[in-house]
Length: 230
Length: 230
DNA sequence: ATGTTTCGTGACGGTATTGTTGCAGAAGGG
DNA sequence: CCCTTCTGCAACAATACCGTCACGAAACAT
Image 1 (cartoon, rainbow over the protein chains, first blue to last red):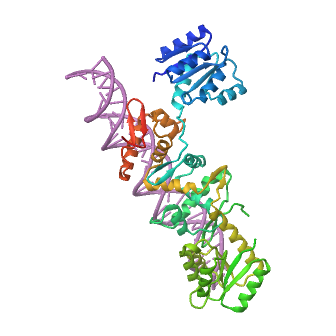
Image 2 (cartoon, each protein chain N blue to C red):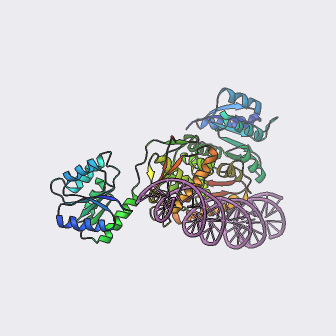
Image 3 (cartoon, rainbow over the protein chains, first blue to last red):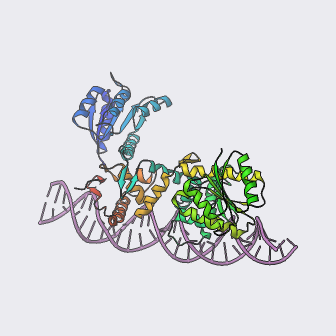
């Protein structure tokens, strides 16, 4: 996947070296030797990726990245910082400025190309803030969190719904019939004992997380989730 | 926390005994001697909790509970049943009728007050829609809607996540690589063409809902969801 | 028009998830 | 203490879902 790459590097030798490597890999390289030049290029043609040296005469690469991140047109463009020293503080500063990745000098061409490829793959467009509606169903960014929770706890769909129901109806005893209605659905034909098995599976899935003994069984009645097990 | 309690008990001596105890604890007690009387009281003023004797002349306490559960206004009100003998069958019947707890006669005033306090406390989370926390994960009633949406549209997990991503990133073209990162996960190893198949499946699942042509393909680039198909 | 790339789509095997069943153990009732 | 009922649990079969591939259609470049 060839891409238009804007390379911002003040040292001619290094600039040439990098540019040749990138072009050899099929990319198209636009060159700039300082922040002002880079901004000029960006104004006329938006590149697919920005490769910015940290140390630049005048405006630093870091400041350039920060500035590009504040403009609407350039906000989406991935940025890779080239830096000689990559201390933890530098990494944090780079990320805070909006960079997507950093490459520490000296670096092999292979590594640089790998980073470029990764960044181009990874970057996701900014999420729309407004909730979207479809078929009378409103979906907002919070939804991601839900599925995140499910995967984080490594629960099957039914187990997760079961747990969620217990958490939103804690401290109460629910009969198997009630659980089937609420978790499975009102109109499903399932054996009541099936609930037992899923309770078992949920308990087992919850053990490694240290949340043991959360769900207690009430003989003859059903199950209950207690926040503070006696 | 003082509460308005409706006591339904036909035997005057027991009724008085209980009422005095409750009032001594700070509660306000309304009395009824049968189901008809109780329903009359409920119509005029909704109590915070119902204390119903199982054995009542005419309509039984169990039938009364069941009836109260079917009416929208009284559905949320906690019910405690007073019963002489609590066999397994009785417990099940009580739960199915919608009772929140049982107190078996004879009982100590302390026990009754404890149960009342517990029931009032348990009911709170459900009514206030409070989010619950577990393992650092916050789950709120929103979650139900999400899974509801998934089941309403009859989508598989991946299809739903794919659709959700498109909806929250509408009007933008997403490459297959980006979709893999965002919908599947950053570190999964799957063929890019797999996206095609899931797009296909999602489209097919969306057809019956009349939401056709939602996802358009951009040749050489990827896919895009357009709110207003041309 | 022709060749090349890209996409749609059906089919297939692999894996995960689900619902059911049977049996052993636990809990209560008498 | 014995007997009945209920629950824990493992194994099983059915199903749903997923990723991959192959082939044809469509779009594009020359």
